[in-house]
Image 1 (cartoon, rainbow, N blue to C red):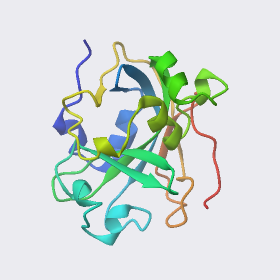
Image 2: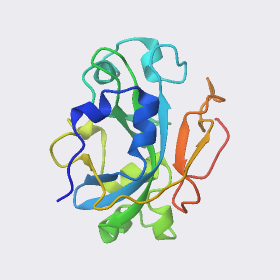
Image 3: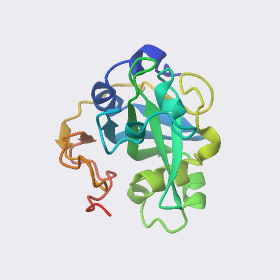
Image 4: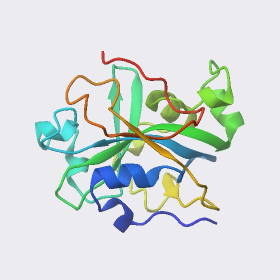
Length: 194
């Protein structure tokens, strides 16, 4: 079995973690997929980051130890998965924006019956959590152990990383903190901020 990423992997700057997660395998509930798109959120100075508002009941997990899930609801209908990065007390996280489904696609399709293709199943943060069965019930779980985890791939693939500004946000939208595997058909479509 591939090794689960340890706490030290996440205890680095969010930008490094966001790049490093590309190509790794996210697993949950009998499903798994290759991470093909991420976005880094840099904490207090990043107005697009939830942590910029300080410690609240909702954001407390971001200010804690690295390697935990931060799952929240957006637009009243989509749950988004972030992985806490940075050392304990320094808020930072990485939004997992898209996966390339690898196994459990039948289960993913049952959760996302409207997806036209396998590439659409986990394309976009809300689609990804729905297909993988990730909800706010996983908020705060330790992703260095348990059934929601990120693992090393069985073999490393050569990938080319493309860097763009983050998408779907208003503040600090021009910061080049979106990372994706160049040419992968499962990345989320670029959309303007709402």
